[in-house]
Length: 345
Figure 1 (cartoon, helix red, strand yellow):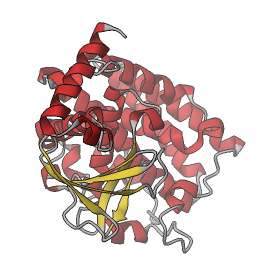
Figure 2: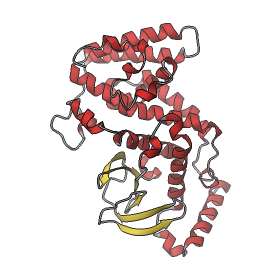
Figure 3: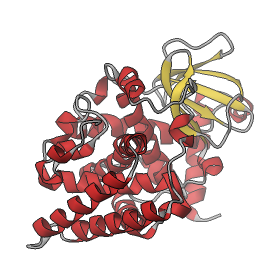
Figure 4: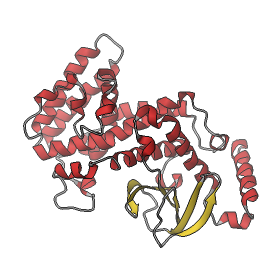
């Protein structure tokens, strides 16, 4: 066992023994999960309002799904199938538990308990993430809580007329977008290539001309899609792409943030600054490197991040419009030619 892992194990044991007997600790929520969740909540308080005005009002209810038990945190009204575990001194929250109901690999936000949008998340081991990635992913999901809890969100989504009668919300994942259409794929490649060039040109004399090319290719992509398909694409960029953008903006905001000693001692923790560099490089590689045919909806995450970074340069105040002018990010900057939108939009 390496020194870092040994120190963390000893530290966790001391904290657990201070709270109650060791045998009781073994059956409760793991110390490392508690400090990860606490770190995400601290980061939300530290960075949230710097990025999204009003996000501090959004709930941070969370359901941690383990192999056999689910732990409910920060939820004001647990359903009757939960039992009270106790007041957690690390999380500063009441914690409830029940036998596992949801998939232990989940990373999602929806009204899982009552009507409150709740982050439902498996452990880092079950979601394939290291501690730093897992913590930042919770901030991605918290951004969804912010979005979903905003006025008229569900009514505006319904106006997109994309559900096909599905009331479960699964249409957001399963909509029949023309991922394999050869014409759509060809133009998507031109569009994302132009976006990648514009991202590379940030801070250079060629940025303005690169943005013109990117905007033109984006509009051509819009023009070849059927109206419902473009509405779905726009919705995904607006919702999931900007959530991925938010992850990066959080990492930027953490430049002056000091993580807690407990998190820093986690064996798989990567310092936020180091992870930010890895994260951005990976997302930029996906922007032009991933094909619509092969990666389908997953493409829209990195694409939205890239477009958010372009918007930051074109209109630094664009985020102020996000909750009131929904679903079409091209409306947030004149350079993306919103006046060219067709009447059906």
